[in-house]
Image (cartoon, rainbow, N blue to C red):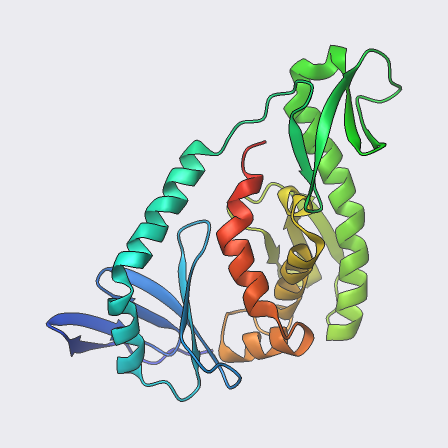
Length: 250
């Protein structure tokens, strides 16, 4: 989708630049989403520090700029909070009583002397073979990856059929700061950490990525497609931006 040429807009003594998809104000760059159902403006600070703003279709450019400038202190505070949280994300210790997430729930760890597999989830606890505790992170990542593969394959099969998207492959791996991606030839990828999130939030990631099967960018059409299948996508997206950092510590 071609972008409109950027042009500087002077407001409050500061320059702002806006296109049909991005808004740059005071050195900050926002991805702009418009929705006919949206009545108010909303800013989201993603866990990676990326910024987005959701606006009603009729909102004027100067209204977006004014809104951002009013929220500059809040925005910079949130960016700093995200940075601190990423730096201080608690590193898990593989000892009795440590909590580990799976599909939004926290399960305590129990070290056991004998077990057929390195790690299992039973009776509301993760059970890790004591002699394997020194490889705890590697073992947990492997367990999460296997579980995520099955969970996302099922979700993608259900959602892709509803959304009219052809998927050739579902793959779970470490995607860095991305929760998922939709690649060429119908390949969709998910971060293994996404299986630590509550199911409704992980489902948003699925719908988000499958919507890219129709719209490769984050244009208005993309968000309309997301909204068709998840009318409450905004709170799920906001929850992910605010709370996704909690799965960083493993």
